[in-house]
Amino acid sequence: MTMEAYALCARPMSSVTEWQNAINALGFDLTLQVKQIPPVTHGHLPATWQGRQAGFECSVIPLSDLTETYPEISFGGPWACIYAFYFATFSSCAGVWIAVAACVRQLGGIAFDPQEGHLLVGEDAIRYAHETLDSVTRLEAQLGGPPAG
Image (cartoon, rainbow, N blue to C red; front, side):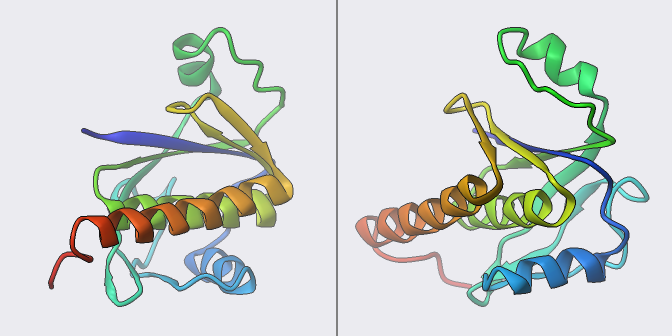
């Protein structure tokens, strides 16, 4: 099952370096392994988290995609850039929420978790990323540890 998350930002990331620096500034162990980021590219963005694959799908979408799909949510705005993230594994879930938290902190904006119906601003997005990492670690332990490889 594919899950999704969104970062609604005041501006787009200028480069992979800016995004990686934002991740590093938050103290997360995620390394982006791409040369370009959306909107220049879209699709799978490779990344590693705790030494294993944690890549995710990412693209830039118009705000109307969200407002039409989730008419009950008030997204505020205006937002210059909406990053849409899609993931299906525990490690990619970790990667996404780290990337989202870095976007929100670096670019000014909000995060949206449609599975939970949460809109998260500032420090709440960072806290949510930490909680997600804790949940991923706990679930993997219950299932016998992270996958090999």
